[in-house]
Image 1 (cartoon, one colour):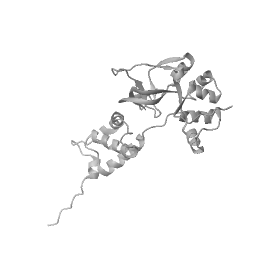
Image 2 (tube, rainbow, N blue to C red):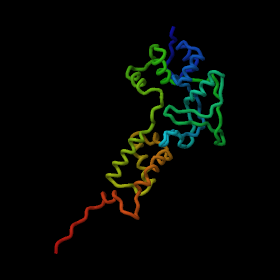
Image 3 (cartoon, rainbow, N blue to C red):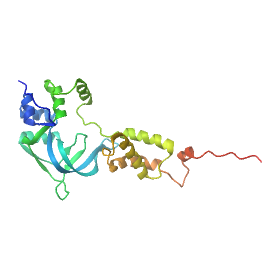
Image 4 (cartoon, rainbow, N blue to C red):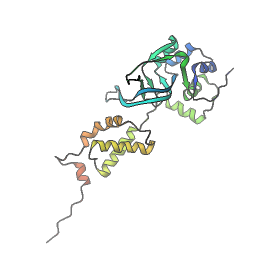
Amino acid sequence: MTKALPRKPFYSLMEACERWGISVSDAAAYVLEAELVLSYAVAALKVEVSERDHDADGVPFLIPCGQRRHVGTLDLHRVDAFHVLTQGAEMVARFFSTDGEVMEPLDDAGERCLVAVERSALAVRHAEFERFEAQQVRLPSLDRTAADLDKGSRRGRGAPKKFDFEGVLCAMIVLVNAEGVPATQAEMINKMRAWFEQRLGPDNVPCDSSIKLRVVRFWDHIKPDTKKPSALQDIHAAPRRGRRSA
């Protein structure tokens, strides 16, 4: 018989397993195959936040974005979660936000540290709970609509991109064509930040280091150069008046 559960922001692993009728070892198999994401609830955990990106060769790297205290759930890497499930506990050095940010725990001195995660502390976020249940267990949904189900199945398992950098670069092309190249790299960064602020709000924009990383890729090719003529300067130059006949 399916166990009824109240709507909660997250559920303990034991609650989830009981509702789905699976064992911890079953959950471990789903986790290792990236079919189920497990989380860890924290209260004001100090973390170093980084965004993930890839270079021209597709090699991933991190862009440090500062420190903050995180309140809520953090997702575990599937290998860490598997070790917690099979061994009972694991020392974890890296977590992930729902937006794909990398969260590395810090101690009181601001140094990176490990966090002990025990099996009893594992949780399943509500959205992940419903996604897994809809795709794997086929039990009656708690409160997800048909539209949400369709959207979740199209999105897949990977974390969605948090920031539309392709969109902001397109916007900067239009801006440069209309107004000319900003005088400095810092001004270009400010304009890109303003674009994100207008769409996402001032508290939900990429960190400056993340924006700068994109700007430095093209800035040397478009920056104003007073030592030589610029095609863009010609485009935006004021029209010359013809000579008056004598």
